[in-house]
Image 1 (cartoon, rainbow, N blue to C red):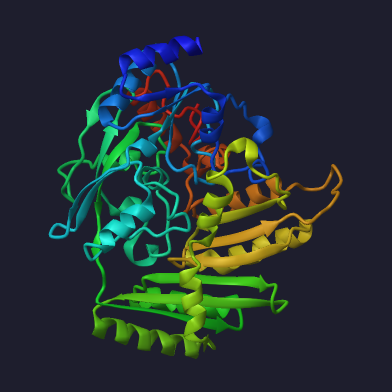
Image 2 (tube, rainbow, N blue to C red):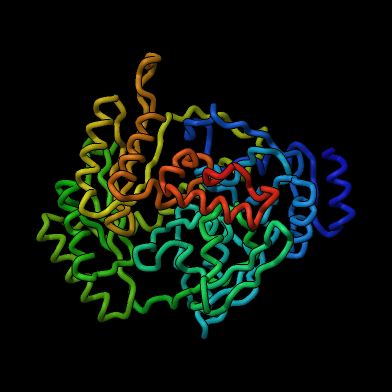
Length: 466
């Protein structure tokens, strides 16, 4: 059957690369979600595809979609393979679509503050190109050197500049979409459309409703002035109070990266805030002065500028390391590393509940013996994260598992009126909680899915959709 599909596609779309080589399939059938990160693998039925294609045009993908829908063959779109939730991991075989062949930056308009770019363009490449036109990409995640535009939109990812410029999805003006039927929805070039903006159906939908092939993005002038400072606080509560005051006063930083974490170098817990501003010179100077006053009033101590510079210069190191140690090495040659079980939670809940939620999480983790490595706030005071590990060498069968503890904390965030994930999407890792997350909305999403994709070929098994 697989050989028939390969032959069909080579005849139908001769310009598209089609491969059934095991090495090609293996290198594209996973993402940054590893088995120790996902605690529900035993409930999943993973079926690896036997075919991978690399299109270079929208029309090739449209033809492929029609072919697959007519034969009920699953299609799984994949960008840079940097997602940490498993959204690009195939679960039902079929055909994996490597979108990195769509790698053209088609237009940069400084006058209109927009860029037209294909979905497979790597974010770092786009950022460098914009810089040459004195423009700024507002999305700057840890994965900038390796993630693609389409992947970032499909998960509605967050970056270091999200405090000012928002998530990746909020920077989207228009999207070109290939529907499961092979129809192509053209992108809008206007920031405001008449009637419902259909782009919102596909932002964060992880390729379940259609394939993003082209994006029109808002880009920003490189600011006249920029600042970045670092502060040390005596406690999480003191630093969090400052971030709340920023929001109450309408102060809008470009960077808010606040964390309480255990320092291996000092052997103590340290609570630091990295705070940045973009704007015209007088604006940045005024905001910097006011923010220093607010930090000092809440017992914040200014750290040397070298501390802030080091933070900013190394922010992409994990992405560069992942590229060097994983993506650039053939799957069969990658060294096997023993990694301590861990999970990184990113929940969004009302500001008034953050400190109480943190206390409840601490109580639960202490009760079950899971140490926390980091508590943090990113971009907005509602966006709360925590990193936990499992140091227990041989926990008994009756011991509470990390899976159970994580799910309790995620559902607790939902019960506080929040959401279980603000940063990385849903994928496979959080799919089991989607029904609880959006309630009757999941039935609505399922009806939309069945209308657009009656054969259920587009990235099946994700977002809690069957």
